[in-house]
Image (cartoon, rainbow, N blue to C red; front, side, top):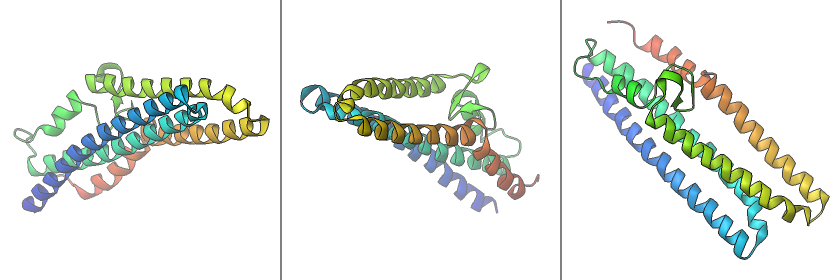
Length: 197
């Protein structure tokens, strides 16, 4: 059983590495896409500004998706470490991650621990999120005069679609991450699967 647990632990550690890399890849892609839309909007086609809020929102949702897999892998890895090494003297990566990166099973904004759980990882998460919110707002401000120039129907449709998508992403994100629903679901399975040795 220990060899199976060790193989699963190696798999989960591979997932944490992959989803960290995937997160930063998605941040870079979104940053380039948003920057390109601003350049195109200022230089040639002002309607490109209307795409900036959608690109920023999609980038935020994608990076939160990456974070959800990171949390999944860390939760499972922590349980596997405890199962393989109940004294927690050798396999301490889960404890280090909990203290140094972000905590599991505590209230946080996606992967940004708050209060005494605040870390550089949390700061970077909030910096990236804040930059995305800023791009969303600036893109929207630059887009509105352009969209208004195409008529009231376009303005109403644009605002309605953007508002629905934004509110849906916020509501589900608050429920899943801040409210703890995602980690609660993991705990139910992990508590059942890892009885005390």
